[in-house]
Figure 1 (cartoon, helix red, strand yellow):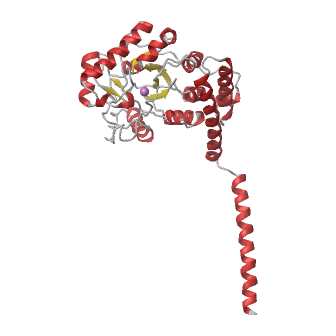
Figure 2 (cartoon, protein in one colour; figure 1 turned 60 degrees about the horizontal axis):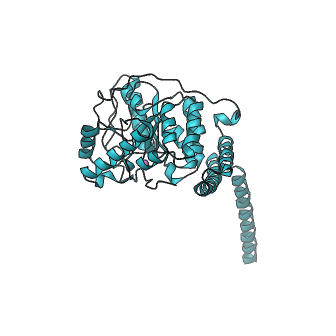
Figure 3 (spheres, helix red, strand yellow; figure 1 turned 45 degrees about the vertical axis):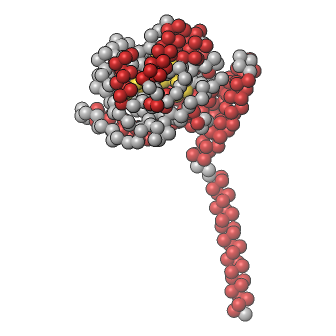
Amino acid sequence: MLKLRSLRFSAGFTIACLMVSTLFLVGCSAFKSKEEKAAERAKEAFRQSKGETKVAGNTNGNPKWKKDIDDSLTRGRNAVPGNQTASNPSGPPPRNQTTNVKIDLNAAKATTYHSVDTGGNHIALTFDDGPHPTNTPRLLDMLRERNIKATFFVVGPNARRYPEIMKRIVAEGHEIGNHTMTHGDLSKMSNTSIKNELDGCRDAIIGACGVNPRIMRAPYGALTSSQKIYIKDTWGYPNIHWSVDPEDWKRPGPSVVANRITSRTRAGGIVLVHDIHAPSVVAMPQALDGLLHKGFRFVTTSQLISLGNRTASVEETPPATEATASAAEAEAEASAIGGEPTPAVPLPSARELGGESHARIEE
Ligand code: NI
């Protein structure tokens, strides 16, 4: 009898437990966190961007491709909560305030810049590895609409291949930087090979648009200290690293890229993006408007350096994200109270952390 009672009790208890856990699960799925919903949307955007890229690779210049990108841009604009353009998708975007500054890189002695303390809300947005025949013109439209000046670190072969786009980049007030010929790891090259890389890209840029670049960016951020000095002495180029890397080359989806950029950018920051990747360009309206709404002023990289003679360059600071963002935060705080920027703590180099891994030059 006792046994039967205990059996009944345990059966009843099990059923009750099942009911409670079912209710709990139903409750959970009904109240998905914002992060889960954002992740789902990002996955969807990623799936869409993958499809779009596939088409782009095969039917370059095809009107259907253009329509796909248009649709994708509209989706990108409307899909994300808290996106300023979503509430008024047809309205004009915010506009960047023009900054005029005399470019003077001679006064800037650092061989590498990760960010620059300008004493203001200036930031530099940089696009690597292009120009790309369709992504870059699309991006230029977005920048023009917002009066934003950016920096394009181009590779020599693409500069040569798309001179009209290079001319447009220059005509619209953007800066061009040297990003080598082969996008190889310079830290493993001899000075003779580096000379071929940088001379070749410089000549391709001059040939395409008549501009002699004043700055360079090492692919993957990979340069030894002595190479940085060699490059500064030979070409006068400072090496431009970055303080914000949204890791767009991993294709996490446009809304993730946009959110990373808007949440991690601090005053004086240098933001790394790749205009060879269509989803990165799709991310731009949300990222640009988010940064403009936060009160940042976009300038070219040479403007940023010229604005800040107190530079925040620390060798071997990490390329990415939270660590650098908090260093920039500390720096901004120090500036606000009139102190000197807090030196960033030396951390593993870009390469150890994976750095900028986008060796593939698309199309
Ligand atoms: Ni690159």
